[in-house]
Length: 277
Image 1 (cartoon, rainbow, N blue to C red):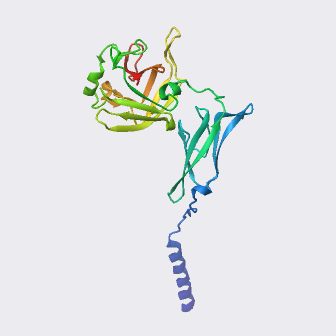
Image 2 (image 1 turned 120 degrees about the horizontal axis):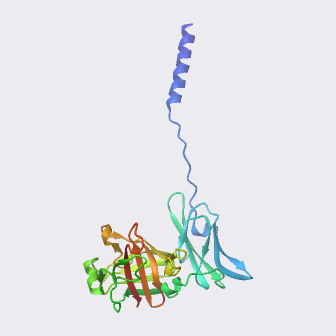
């Protein structure tokens, strides 16, 4: 009888030991693939027998996706994007393997025609490749504040180009910024020689109209990781400004504005006045 009890006790203890051992649910990492093994495509939508400027991107590979299509980027596995130039467009794909290594591959896509509308502002801002902008020293003022929906340039407290360094060092006389079509890149070159780089995008549906129906702002320019020259809001502790109403943008001139939070008609807005170099 004692042997039976001892045997039963040992069995019970062994069950406790096994029950206390941690159970791990591990996800095994897949094997890393090379760029040659990528299964990716970039196919233009065909309209009336021609390759349009809308392109379907598709990644069937076991990697995370990052597509750079020249005027923007997307991290979706499958996406439809808009290209803004005819001819050969280069698309750069970067894949992230499960164990952390990156692989890249380029795809050339031919666009026959701009079937889908492209904002003219891409051409104005980048000249089809890149364009450099500087303060418009011929204007009465290049930066300052004025009335939201009331003014279209600095009108109250105004500064000339020579005064800008007092607001942001290196961003006055001699400072420039270059908008590049490839990657929608914005590069700011300070008068000190220092460089900063970020990205930009447009939303030309963000039109601001006055009560009489006339257009005050034709769209919105957004920057990421960078501001335009002297892109600050003084009454908000010199906070960086990343979104700007587009008052004027053509081949020669650009005027941007930023309204302080809560500003109504004739509330405080800030204005930037640039010209193409």
